[in-house]
Image 1 (cartoon, helix red, strand yellow):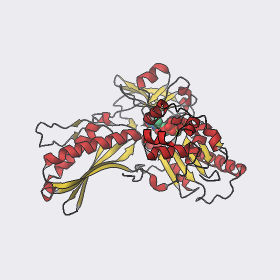
Image 2 (image 1 turned 30 degrees about the vertical axis):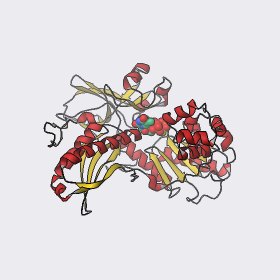
Image 3 (image 1 turned 30 degrees about the horizontal axis):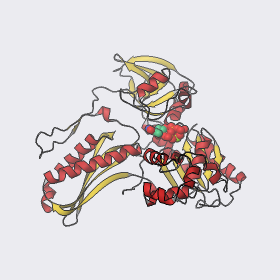
Image 4 (image 1 turned 120 degrees about the vertical axis):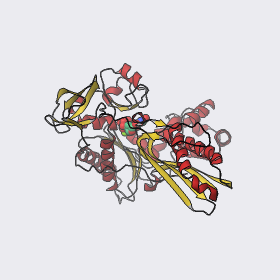
Length: 455
Ligand code: TTP
Ligand code: MG
């Protein structure tokens, strides 16, 4: 742990919903819910106005509709979120070379390597407020919460305490007192399973944890976790801020004891790896567009083949189907002997787009894997609630609702006042989907991904 508050953590407030309110003036100050609009969709996030009703991330959408029927329900515009994310990360990288993004809207910054020398409360307040103001200005109105502390744990606790739209600096020396009454689940890395095990031992708060015996913890949770818990209970956390820790792909590989030559032998391993990858993907809350199958031959040459889907997926079935079909496409390599097989995913988004596709992989004959065919159901333009559109007469607007062959559009943008509503036929030739136009205009279509952190 450092003796200065030199790690900053920034997290945007109600990120996806805030971008929607920025670009849709009529929704400002109102409940906005972003997520999977369909039957079994879940809430990605919602505005603070919707949180008052009890709506939160990961809640089934039908429940959110019940709690807050008058909210605007939007399916999300990832292009716009990606651009805002990039703008924020650029601001943070101007502070320090060591910026570690944790997701699209959240990052740690190491102020020491950024050259900050004055760690007085006044100087840090000025710095923190300066970053928040810059984010607000550059993104055209998004608000961020910032925490500054002597460790990652403290910085993150600070930004959580600062939410929404605030700054909290945790003065060095106060850390251990500050966390004593927190539940053990507040500790980074302590998920529901560990929380339950600790609770079973009668350990509920961080102060309780301090009273536990090392042997008891080690016995129940293993050496590594026990050590971590004993340190963090006293706020001892020397995890570094690392720009290299970004995750750009997730993969699972198997190296075999003997070389395989038969596709029937390799198929179960590819399928199992695909399921492991899918599980890690879901845990990270991501969906992937690209699936890769890697083979290393007995002669140590490596062959990788990828397929990029039209939509982003996270299901065991889809990832396994694609991996198996990529294996099938590389059958000609098998006779050389396969010593390693790996399945990976990349091209992450926060949203599933599986509904747009049909993956049909008939596997009637076990030894033959049909290539899945991706059929985009775009017989005519699909408008999803919240999508940007352009009308030749009325200009830029967003899809307010669709049904019965009609689409209702509200004509407003980030820079207009609340706009008027008009309804059109779905196939109105004057109406088209509009590209995301960011404030500052840097639409380049590049996927915002996270750098490699393979196991
Ligand atoms: P968060 O930072 O967890 O949430 P938030 O920014 O919406 O709200 P706040 O930080 O003010 O509490 O997540 C950032 C974005 O990630 C969020 O806007 C939407 C997306 N997300 C999901 O898609 N699914 C999820 O389960 C979560 C937690 C977030
Ligand atoms: Mg956030």
